[in-house]
Amino acid sequence: MKINILFVLSLLVIASCNKVPPANQINYKEQHRPQFHFSPEKGWMNDPNGLVYFKNTYHLFYQYFPDSTVWGPMHWGHAVSKDLVHWKHLPIALYPDSLGYIFSGSVVADKNNASGFQNGNDGPLVAIFTYHDMKKEKVGRIDRESQAIAYSNDEGNSWTKYTGNPVIKNKGDQDFRDPKVFWHEASSRWIMPLAVHDHLEIYSSPNLISWVKESEFGSADGAHGGAWECPDLFPLKTNEGIEKWVLIQNIDRGSISGGSGTQYFVGDFNGKTFVNENSPKTILWIDYGADNYAGVTWFGIPDSRRIFIGWMSNWDDYATRVPTKNWRSAMTIPRELGLIKTDEGLRITQRPIKELAQLWEKKIDISAQAFKDSLVIPNQSIQKEIELQFDLSQSTASTFGVIIGNKIKEKVIIGYDKAKHEVFIDRTKSGKIDFSKKFARKHTAPYRAANLLKLHLFIDAASVELFVDEGQIVMTEIFFPNEDFSNLTLFSSGGSSSLLKGELYELKSIWAMQNQGTN
Ligand code: FRU
Image (cartoon, rainbow, N blue to C red):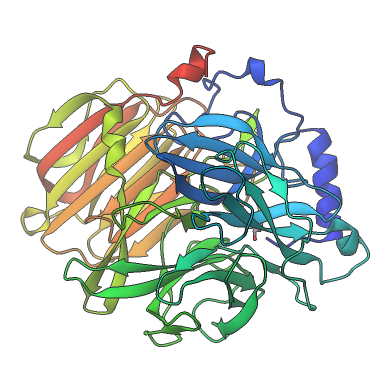
């Protein structure tokens, strides 16, 4: 995100008009409130931070401004979950202080107490984050970001900031942020990927306190339409057992669907340097929709599961304006990452985590059939999961897919265009669109389907996530209808479509407890 003084001043003015209500007036039933995605009770949220699995609990920290529904002095909000589906809100973990706002970062479980912060039976949790110093920014200094740490000896309930902060000082770099630390077994050291304006820097440390710069990557690789932010670096295996390192690199502008988005690289990491195995010109995107940003993965999940979550919005001019009242933004559903061989090389796949199946409330089978024009699927729930399998060899349609809509003719169209070989989501008529000129758009993803095409959709009150052919292509988009989208129609234009299999699951809300006021 680009931050300058005018921007901050205008945010403060907007903030005064975006005061949030007291928490006891919030029941998770407001218009546009996501029912199975994480959203804060009130206030502004952006990036997921500090994703860590510790003592059978998943922690989700996040960029948070509790006092307004627009970005402002950043805190770390905190929530925990036993299943990555239901979340319990906890008190704010980190507050801004005289060194600055608390920007994005990570948390690790320091099980051998390398940091020396342990006080009790278990190694501490250590948070590594960026301080953004507004005093320096106000006087025009660019060396305003530095890296700092805090620790917790009570499973993340309370945090102590390290007295020797910052642990990495700024030597004159604008945009110097978002440390995503992990333990590198082969070299027995902590490794910190850090985004520095147009490239990645890699630091190492024996104790999370003293850090040495090892290498730089990327000023000539991948997409550079904006600042690099929020990196992540981890190994991933194909089903055939090929292991590669994946570098996730968020970029605040110039992504495939406009604005902020998430690119990634595949290659090798030897404890010091990341080497991209594709040509520097290759650009790979995690998501072809407009609304999946700042995504990173959990530290410490067993069984080599690599689980990713992103912020479901876009900095490119509408994140702070979307028409929700008490809160702004939600996270994506958590997704399990995989790696597959394709003709072009190794590529990431994303699948919705299997834990989401516990939300299935009612299953509706859609019988196998050939259909033309439209096929209405009666259902009762706003939030749902849909799996559709089409046989393209038996289809003459030029485009086909799903329309979610309401009786006042607002709709979102999700489909495949056979002639153009692309998947698309069209939200041009999705309801409230006037809050930004950049919102009402149709986004596409290039994809050459084989004879069988699988569309797997997760639809909530204000979002759709589309997983194509086991997550080879993913699109995430938000929308804001004036009346909820309760209608569901399959469409087939320019000929017939052959549906081989169709399943719809109405989904339970994860916020039932909040709705009863018990939390
Ligand atoms: C990404 C980002 C990060 C920064 C944080 C500030 O969305 O701009 O680079 O740490 O948000 O809230």
